[in-house]
Image (cartoon, rainbow, N blue to C red; front, side):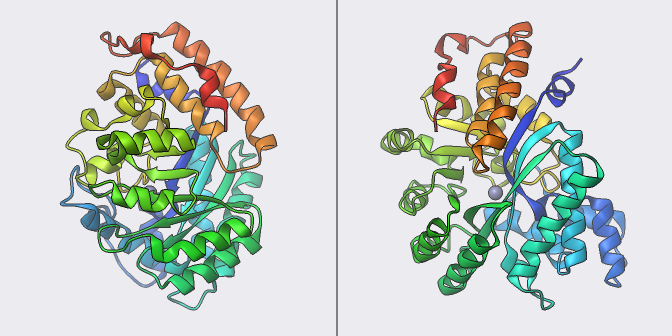
Length: 364
Ligand SMILES: [Zn+2]
């Protein structure tokens, strides 16, 4: 059995996954038709699936324009949320955090509460319909480009909604918009009981990563460029902050030239808590199993190292620990058995000696 198929059968957790980057192409065509738009398959694909490499992050973000424009009703938001949970179940993802920016879905009069409610209801419906074994938390994303006061209000609404909303995030064009103006939104989210993450490091330079550390995040979406700055790596490790890495997405954003150039193995072997996610399975034409397999091969990870990274995602989730812990225990056992049977993934992996102890991965 090939590696992708092997990994598909193992229980997985995914922490960095955008709703609007995960819309099925066939669904987009139907939603467009409901809006009176006749889009051909080829055009939808051209507008929603990014090339292997864009010019930069700004170009990558243009592939979200069409799906966001189609997700302006409760029905469409609920539908794609439910379909994403179905897709995760097929991938044997057992714990997932789905994120999206509610304020991008207000163009036709929905309120933030209605947007969050629609996504939550889609997830609940899928869970009921397919007896989904996927435990899902939602992360509400604030946009860097939006007014800080609007993001404070968003944080209040997200916190007031309660479960399944578990976290608060910041995303959007990083080069043009620094994080510090949104500090008040992060204080409000934390005050309301949400856990904090933020996108950073999709452009070069450590500054944007340091800025989000100052917001009090316990996870960073991306953050790979921290590897260029040993003092920053030390700080991330010392604070116990997790980097939710998305290798294919970073190649597409032209941050690195190839999967081999992503510092996944370097950061993991340096003792930094890392996880691997797809970011946007539609935009990046990938799945979590494929992402794990491609990254492991490109990085010469041993099976034990890949198992550590995969299981770490269960431990670092924002959802209630009593829901995640049983999943984590089962996943660790399955991954350890798989790793014992397949110690070397590439035939040339020699990293087993530098494998960090599993215990480090469990601590929060
Ligand atoms: Zn992301």
